[in-house]
Image 1 (cartoon, rainbow, N blue to C red):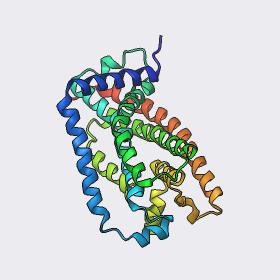
Image 2 (image 1 turned 90 degrees about the vertical axis):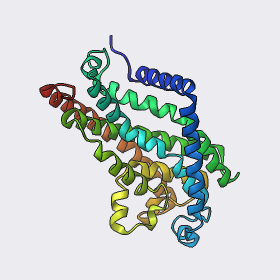
Image 3 (image 1 turned 180 degrees about the vertical axis):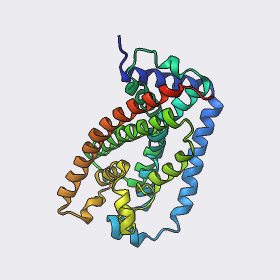
Length: 279
């Protein structure tokens, strides 16, 4: 009998919650690091040109703009790298081959782990998000908030698919951790986490529009803050640009879902040639 990926996600999330409650000093340290990051970003806000941001996205509320993006950062890292980290760890311990004998489809074994960690990361997302909403004020609607959160959830699912594709590289090439830092920074900065994508040079904007977290973060800001969508640079009116961003996000989820399944099958076949362990 096969086990569903959501049961894997639940098991991983439960294990992490148990670890957090057991090793409290480490958990407190994680919270403190988040708070310190916020304080440093507040200092950084003082040197940003408000007029440029206002011209690009239609708001002078730079703090809310930035903190809504920062709240999403933990999900970017988990979505992209958790699957690869899990596989690499199991290969080093020599237990991946045993794990692959469990009645779980390979795709769901890999994706389920990332989803479970993403679920527990909401513990860090909620206070960061609440902090951002404090800067937004009371101008947003409940429906707008739900739409913004839905965009974030869709983005997480897309990022997990991309992370599954990267994990196939671990199965084939073993050590690929050097890619993590490079691509993590790329997805964060070009994804519009800190500054508006509309302020990028044209060639960087083209690259940024290919990153799924761009539209997730942008839709969150549009629905919660009332900023202008990125695609308004290319299509009008705003309703068309907004609808197109939603459509692209859904299409990305479908496309990367199939690409992830193909990549995992290819990576597994390649790994079978040399074994699922480090020599």
